[in-house]
Image (spheres, rainbow, N blue to C red):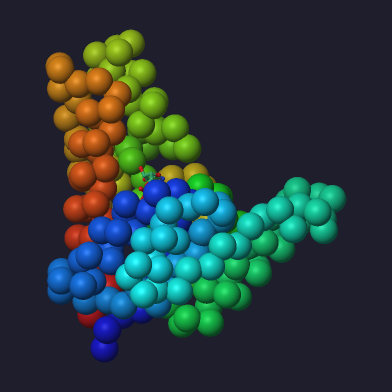
Length: 202
Ligand code: GRF
């Protein structure tokens, strides 16, 4: 039975594209049944449309207007988005460049099935600036490697869930910030496909 994937993204969607390509050429036995973005201009939606996959933009703004308390707004948004995602009956929800920390209002709808990609090694650089942090550590302290990980998201912890897979990425003497980021993204695209395929395997 082909697994059903929902993918959430906030930006370019190059990791979504890696999943789309892998599902198309058989490296990933799964069907991407829905894509959701939280940024209006997320190119990930264009990639989904080009692959014939439904993509929906679900902004946080209306929830901020309706709730004075920021936490209540987040929980209401998360519950709303979870309802949309749940209608696809996903075997896994993949956060591929998704820039929003979920509360239990989302996560508890998909126990053990939310998977996040993060461009750093376990415990190294949590948060939204992992690549910058690694580059600065290289320039300041001579850090010669960083990496990528794919992990489960059981709770609101940021980039600290149980690790499914990780892979080192060397920082080379001739690198600049751009060449390092390119190398990291290339490893992300590989590791995400391999890890999601293994996670979904019966
Ligand atoms: C990736 O490094 C991802 O890990 C991070 O955002 C970047 C954008 O990825 N969270 P994509 O091109 O939007 O998939």
